[in-house]
Image (cartoon, rainbow, N blue to C red):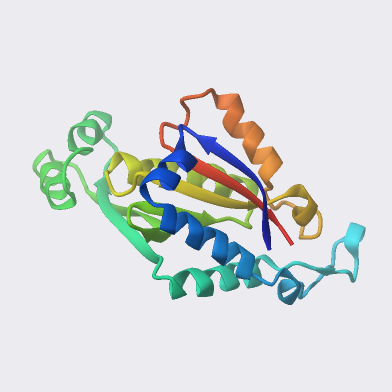
Length: 203
């Protein structure tokens, strides 16, 4: 596959190029190593593309996972505790998980365990490969990447998305680069408050 478009939000791409040039090379190599045609395995049941072979998101994800893990990009989770009390959440937000739990209990509330998980992290750079529905991209950008950045786990997030030319050959409802770029730009230059790189890819 190939990188067709790139958008640098809050100098995300510049940060990687200056501080982690080898990681950027790895990202380029992984994308170039994906054989999209091997992932064209989903027989469409939709009216507009009936019986046509489409690119399968699951197969594309598996291929990315295999290639990224081969270069030691690994999953990372950050656990924390939540509750229904707004003031208590504000109080415990900067605390470590263990301290959050005890503080919530001492305040007489019920702590609920939760976590954020990013599929691929290496040297404080996070990658999300997204071939899912539109809502998943918003969650990646405004929750996952932002939470890991605010929590001082990463310095920049990378979101890999299909270009419209690729998305048009997939099941309906899959997010695509041009649409998500519009959504980011519409929020204004400082939102989300995390350095990002959006990558649009195609076969």
